[in-house]
Amino acid sequence: MKRLSTWQALIVASQLGFVLAAGVATGLIVGWYLDSVLNTSPVFTVIGALAGMIAGLISCVQIARAAQRNGRSE
Image (cartoon, rainbow, N blue to C red; front, side):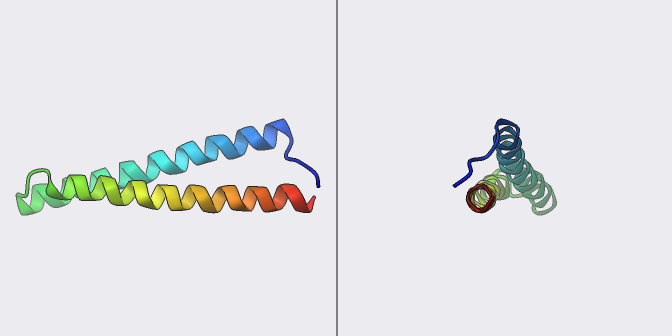
């Protein structure tokens, strides 16, 4: 079993942070837009942030699993 190199581990870690932040930011922007169009103050912003967080976490798990598989197969 070969482990990930230091650079590969750093790349995966930075990718995880970016994916999580991008998911939350996207959810916030979409929620804010829906709130401004529908005049429903913080409802869709909160829902969008939560949905973005969940989507980001799911993506992070997928990336971590792929990195773990790639580290073992080399």
